[in-house]
Each structure stands twice: as structure tokens, then as C-alpha cells.
Amino acid sequence: MTYCVGMLLDRGMVFMSDTRTNAGLDNISTFCKMSIWEEPGERVITLLSAGNLATTQAAVSLLNERMKAPEERAPSVMAAASMFQVAQIVADTLREVIALHDEAGQRADSAFHATLLLGGQIKGSAQRLFLIYPEGNFIEAAEDTPFFQIGEIKYGRPILVRAFDAGMSFEEAMRLLVVSFDSTIKANLTVGPPMDYQFVEVDACRTATRGRIEEDDPYFQTLSNGWGDALKHALDRLPVFDAQD
Image (cartoon, rainbow, N blue to C red; front, side, top):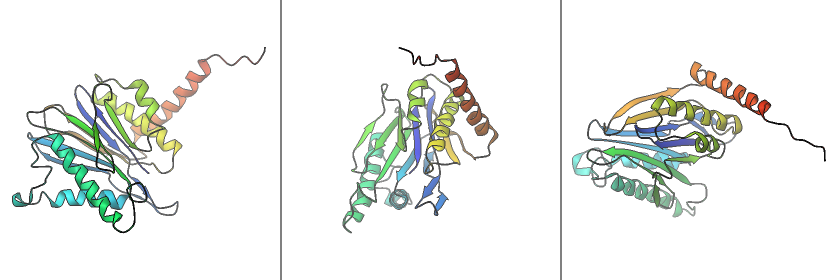
């Protein structure tokens, strides 16, 4: 399992993904689940993946193969005219990869299940964020649903729902995401650091900031400990239950 989040802010887009992969408790490793394609000033495209690693890696590899040379750029995410077309290409590629496993007797809702988050912007159009399902269909983020999660979403979602604000800065969004990821990591062993992140300024069509937060990162440790202490303090301030009739 994994945990990935993509957010639409007034200022731009924010992405974060964990890096833990596992095939049992004795086979845990680290793998980057964030792919970025960009032509600075023209387009920037980010893809986050959750699910079967072989499926997602095959889909990303196929997308990369189809953008190597101009004569091979159809279908290519770097040649598509809009982010909607990019979403269609990515969705078709995911469905194509899963179909190969289907022929061997597997199904998309079994061992080869995978879900993708796709976000980005092409010059002259708005930034857009999509959630792509293994069946190849997808939905788009809007004002009422300004962020998407994939993977192990239930532990970190309450924090995002309560505290998300489209007007927040990248720095404030990063604080919110770190707390959401920390809560997920503490509740589920299949999600773990390091976490990869990316900021994309609206209309810049390029990555503003990209990095990785390790488990021993001072900021991560400060927020993890501070959030735990804050929760305990808030709980202590709430009235206790009166057991008397």
C-alpha cells in the first residue's frame, strides 16, 4: 500500500507521496512513486501512483517510451494539446498494461490493481488534477473537491478535510501534508518515509520546488512530536464524560 496526495491551491499545485513498497513484512523497500515530465515554461505534468508496483512501473515506462523521439510521440503526454488529453493517454496506458495481465487470467481489481493521480498545466490553459482508476476512467478535481488521495487514505483524510484551505501558501500546505502523512505512517506499517514532494506555481508551467523528507528530517520530527503533543493537550481541554445518571 502507499499514500499519495495532490492538491489544487490558488497559488498552484502541491504533491506528496510516500516511498514504501512491500511484498510481506520481510520484503520492504523504497521506491519513488512520483514521476515528473516538464518542458519549462510550456508544460509540467506530475503522476503519482498507488497499487501494484509492477503495474505502475510498466505504465510509467510505457509513457516514457512514447516520448523518446518526435516520430514516436503519439500518443505522448508531451505532445497532447490539453491536460484532459494527457489524462486520456495515461488512463488508456494504465488500462492497456492491466489488460496484458488480464490475458493471463488476472483482473484489474485483483493483484494488478493500480490507481493514479495526475496533475499539471499546459501553457495557455488552467492547472488540472485528475484521479485515474484502474478501469481507465477518471474524475477531475474541482472547487468542491480540491484535493485527491490514493492508497491508504483513511488515516490522513480527516486532517485534510478539516484544515484544507485553497488560499494557503505552499509552506502551509506542506505543514498540513506532513501532519496527514505522519498520522498515516503511525497508523499503517505499509506507509513510510521518505516522502517526495513537489510545488508547481500556477501559470509557471515548471516545478517550483521538489524534494524528499527523510525519517530523521528535523522538520518532520518537530511536526510529528508537536502534533502528538497538541492532540493530547486538546483532548485534556475537552470536558470528560459524566457517567452519573
